[in-house]
Every structure is written in structure tokens, then in C-alpha cells.
Amino acid sequence: MADFWTSILLEQRLPLQTYRLQLNETNMHILNEQSLANRTLLLRFLLTHSQLHTIHPRAFHVAPQLKSVKLSCNNLSALSAQVFSPLTTLQQLSLDGNQLKTIAPDMFEGLVCLASDVFDGLTNLTFLHLGMNSIKKFPPTIFHGLTNLRQLIIYYNKLEVLDAGMFDDLVNLVELKIHFNKITSLPPQVFWSLRNLEQLTLSSNQLQAIPEKSFYNMPKLSTLTISNNPLLSLPDQLMGHMPDIIELYLINLHFNNKLRELPSDLFCCVPKLMKLSLKSNNLHYLHPQLFSSLTTLGILLLNDNELQNLPDNIFLGLEHVLAINLMNNHLKTLPGNIFLSNTVLGALTLSGNPWNCVCSIRGIAKWIRDNERVVRDRDRVICDSPVNRLHQTVGSLSDELFNVCDATRIRSRYFSTQEPTTHIMSTSRQTSALASTTTPPTTISTTIQLAPQQVTIQTTTPTTKPSALHTTSPPTTLQSPTTTLPGEEFLLITESPSFYSKSLTFYDTMVVEQGPEFVHHNVHKGWVYVWFLPSDAALTGFLMFCYTLLVAAGFFLILAAMFYMYRLNKTMDELKAEFERPPG
Image (cartoon, one colour):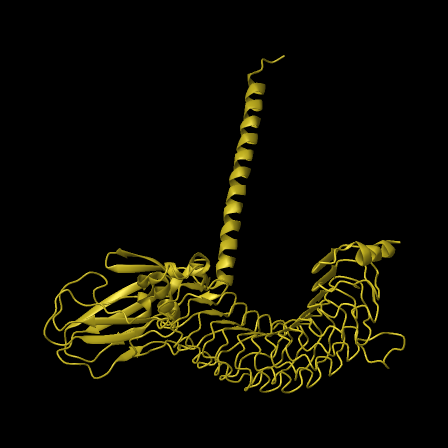
């Protein structure tokens, strides 16, 4: 009955001058042969969000002048061959949100398919929307003849394959959206005929590999999206010369356990690229020259990868980059000069990395302090090690904290014109260590008592440069003549002038120890007591447990003593009362 009244409305009650007819949320099930008859001025027909499931094969024969047909969000599961053929001036066709299926005619008998000639004759069609259906396969020639088509949308279907040559006639296509399908592979050169294509979206498919040179001969491409595919690798030659490309997305290439790095020349031919997203991959390594051609790049997203370090010159040449995201990687340090060439950098994010705040982080810590406004998450860029700097922000590490990383030189208050002598000795946890030089007779000895070990240092004041440096220590004691501390080594360096003058305790000798181990020193009767705590986490935990146990035991003993004192006092009172009671 609903179809009957709708047909009456369409056939008799519409004004003859109607040029646009839009029907939404109707109960219309069938578009019959005469539904659009006698409407010679009708140019745009929209029947959406309804119950339409059948279109008569000659439904559009009575309205060949239509320029736009939108049949979105209905229940169409089949279309007759050449049903749109009379619409020779059609420019827009939308069939999204239906239940269309495309399978080979001999695959399952009784099931319909989208005929290969369904769009024949639509040479003026510029927009075709077939998204959000259940199409599994298109006939290889289905788009042939659509030479003026500019937008083709076939996303949210169940496409498993794209046939070679299916896009060959779409020479004017500007936008192609194929995302959210089940495509597992691409034919070689399948996009080569699309020389005017500007936007290509292949995200959220099942692509495991992309053939070499797949995106060659596409000089006008400006946006390429290959996100959310289980890619295992990318070819060395992927993109040809693309002078107009401005956005490239390689986002969420998840489940890429083997995609650890990218070809060094991957971005060689996209000089105008403005935005590059490589986030949420499994990248472990970036080639030093990977971004060298991207001189106009403005936004670079590298967050949520497995990067453990970056080359010094990885960002060299990115003079126009405005934002870099390095969050949630495995970076422990960065070179201090890594961002020096990025003079217009305005937003840098570094949180979510296990920063190791030892000597090697000194450079980047200083850069963060000097560029606080650039590091947007500086309050969350925190040290993960060593334990004495746990949860400190990297930007809060001052230069003074890294003085131990340099060769520490202690000079006399009084200088002579003669060159001083430098004595180098490494400290260790052995019983004693002795450093001496063979020089003329002025000799000064300093003994430092360390709990629980003792270090004795003897220096002589020469009038000429010493010829050798001798140390006496157990075999495990390390000795090095270097003036810089690599990694976390710590050296003891002393200097004495040619003329000796009485000085403070640490005038000729300085003891430097690592991190939390050096706590404090006391001077008493010429002896220097240096107190240490072990830095080993397990040992520290054990000692803290013992300390807590002793405190608890002491507290328990105090309570027990108080209780027994109370009982003793009570007993004494009872005895006293008993003796004072008069005899009966």
C-alpha cells in the first residue's frame, strides 16, 4: 500500500516544473518503470534512508536528462545490467550504504552480481560512490568508459583484489578511496594511468607488500595514505617523482614485526612534502639520510615506535620543520646537537622514553633547558635511570651535576710560571691504592680514610715534567691516563704546582665517586672520612629491610619492656599492700 501511494505521489501530484526531488526515510520498496515519467525538468533525484530494494530495468528510461542520482542507505542488493545506461548526461551517482554484492556469475548460482556493463554509456559521470556495501569483486571492465570520472569512492566493502587495468580509463580521476576493504595485494602498475590523481587512500586493508614503483607516474599526487596494513616490508623504489605531494601517511602499520627500518631513498622524490607520519610502527632504526630530501617538511610524527637511538644528523636539513613527535619509543639519550639545524622548531614531544640520565645525556639536557618553550611535555620527560635520579626531569639536570663527567682538576691557590704536573689515578673498592711519581725530593703525603676502606695518595712536587706514572693497587684496580670519563667511569686527578704551599685537606687530592655512593665527608685530625652507600638496588633493598626489621624489633622490645615494668610495678604494689595489712 505504501508503494502504491508513493507511486501516485510521484506520477500525479508533483508539479511539472520540479527540477529536484528528494525523498528521505520513506517506505518505498520499488522504483518502477513510470515512477519518474513526465518529469522533463527533473535533474536531481534523491531517494535515501528508505526501504528501496528493487529498481526496474527501465526505471530511468523516462528521465534521461538526470544529472544526479543518489540512492544511498537503502536495501539494494542487485542492479540490472545497463540500468543507468539511458542517463548519458549523469554526473553524480551515489549507491553507498546498500547491500550490493559483486561475485563471479558462476561462483554461487542464484546470487546476483553487479554486471560489468552497468555503467556503460555514463561518459559524463564525474562522481561515483559505491562505498559501504558488501562488494567482494568488481568486473575488470566495470569502470571502462568513465573517462570524465573525478571521484571514485569504494571504501567499506569486502574487496579482496583489484584487477590489473581496471582503472585504465579513469584518466581524469582526482580522488580514489579504497580504504577499509580486504585487499591483500596490488597488481603491478595498477595506478599508473591515474596521472591526474591527487588523493589515494589504501588504509585499513590486508596489504602485506607493495610492488616496486607502484606509485610512479603520478606527478599530481598530494595525499597518500597506506595506514593500518600488516606490511612486512617496503620496496626501495616505491614512489616516483611527486613534486606536488604534501601529505604522506604511513600510520599504524601495526603487526609489522619485521618492518624495522625504511629504505634510505624512500622519500627521495617528494621534495614538497609537508607532513609525514610514521607513528605506531615497529621501527627500530632510521637511516641517517632518510629525511635529507624533505627540505620543506613541516610535521614529522615518529611516536609509538621501537626507536632506541637516532643518528646525529637525522634531522639535518629539515629547516622548516615545526613539529616533531618522538613520544613512546625506547630512546635513552639523544645527541646534544641533533636539533641545532631545526631553527623554527616549535613543538617537540619526548615523553614516554626510558631516559638514562648519565654523562651521555648532558648535551640534550642542556638543549631542553635552553628550549623549554619548544619541549611541550618537558614536565613528563623524566629519568628512568640511574636510581639516584629516578623521576627527575631531564631538563632539571644542571651542568654542575655533570662536572664529574669531565676530568676534575684541582689547582693551587698560588701559580708559578712553571708547568704543573698532572697525576691520574682511578678509584676502586680495594683495600688501598698508591699513586706516585719519580721526581725531585719535595714530597707531600695525604692519607684518606674511607669507610670501610682506606686510600693513601702520595704526590711529589717536581721541577720538571715527570716521565712516568706508577700506581700500586690490586689487579682489579683500573688505571687510565685519559682526561674524559666515558660512560660512567670516574677518575681521580690531582695537580700540584712547582712550589708547595700549605693548603686545605683537598688541596692536592680529590676523591670522586659515582652517584648515590658518595654521600658526605668529614675532616677530623687530618683524616678525611668519606661515607658511602651502595648503589646496587638489591643490596640497598636488603639493607633497608634489615634496617626496618631492626627498628621494628627495637620498638617491640621497648613495648615489651614497658609492659613488664607495668606488671612488675603492679606486683610490687600488691606485695606492699599485703605487708601493710594488719595481721588478723
